[in-house]
Image (tube, rainbow, N blue to C red):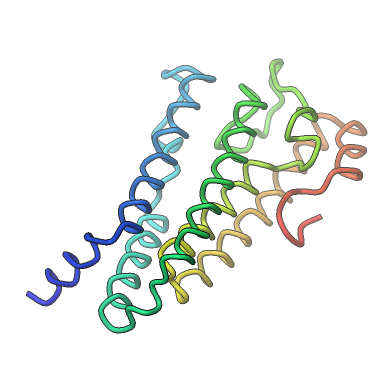
Amino acid sequence: MIAMELASAALERTEVWEFGVVILFFHVSEYALAVAFHGLSNVTRSSLIMDLEYVIMIACALVEYTIELAIFPALKNQWLSKVGLVMVLVGEAIRKISILTAGRAFTHTIRTHHEDHHKLITHGIYKFMRHPGYCGYFITAAGTQVLLCNPICIVPIVVGTWQFFSSRIQYEELFLRQFFGSRYEEYADRVPSGLPFVK
């Protein structure tokens, strides 16, 4: 009974609905763009970018939000929540611009073999950062927790997302250096990664 009352109180809050819309938009748009650029037959459910760890992260964020709303409602600051929403919107804009700019060169999996249509993208948003998709996702992930005013979940989500993309960038760039040689080296020397503290 108490759990139902807590859940009901949380569902009455605008930021919970904004969080839900953000998560839904992110996943549907990622899948739709993958289908648009690669065709339905070449896209798998992995393009929804939703694994068990991710579902657990979402559940933990909502549990934290609900418990804190009941015990420490002052933590759920509407002004701070709007800052989080802006972060999410900025992060999503960066990520979607990167996908649209890269077109077929953007995939949800790291390419380990060079394909004829695989090009080194250095124009548009890629003039300013090498991995704008990762940058956008990182900002969005942090923004979701600011949106919910979650002081606990923000730490493992930000640290975990940073660690994931930091190691992914190193791995991905091994192949980019193989595919594009000195062109990629020169590009990497002059353009930052887009992720804090990752050269």
